[in-house]
Length: 269
Ligand code: ADP
Ligand code: MG
Image (tube, rainbow, N blue to C red):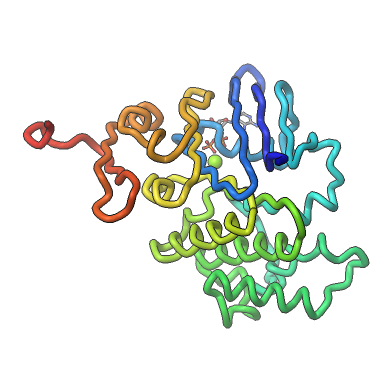
């Protein structure tokens, strides 16, 4: 089976600074990979390598088995959707028009079809924004804007046969707790359809609950890669964030529950 993403010995240096060194991982179809690390660890830099925004200087990246520069851009745009950490939309688009941007790669002659509009409506509905179709994007709350962009990414991948990949940079950063879970549940549904998902997240308990695989970046390197249970340990997380972290058994889920800080001395065994 062709991997969705294969990264081998990726290095990135900007000026005198090493941003990434020796990054290695594989993301298979149907897998949800969560990327963790403190601010400035290089998470967005890694994602920008996967989108082609930053060119590979050293090492190798394959997306669906091919080097990015060898992949036809239009075909890639139907199979790979990206949600950057920040999106700058200055125009007073209606929410549905923003989602429709995701359908452009599916319109070879540049004309939207009634089916495209139907798909965009469905995607807005899927992120809980039914009734927002005509709303001025600029007047939406930060969380609503973030969900509009998520709907755009969903619309982009809709109906593409074969391998698909979604790359999300902190997609839940502006969302309330219910919409954080809703977003991860939708990503999980995508992975069940075979979509490979690469997510940068800061909520460690969302990672514990939803990720299949976790990659931890620190000191420019991947300091851990594996299942949530093997990676989300007090030792690795304390090292990654330079902050004391603890884990306890989740009261009802089969995953660790991560708590920041150390337990008081009297409760330690
Ligand atoms: P994060 O893990 O928070 O997403 P980034 O990947 O955005 O971190 O950035 C990693 C580090 O690289 C940061 O310290 C950032 O300031 C630095 N950096 C990113 N891009 C550049 C650049 N073009 N020039 C100089 N430094 C950069
Ligand atoms: Mg970032």
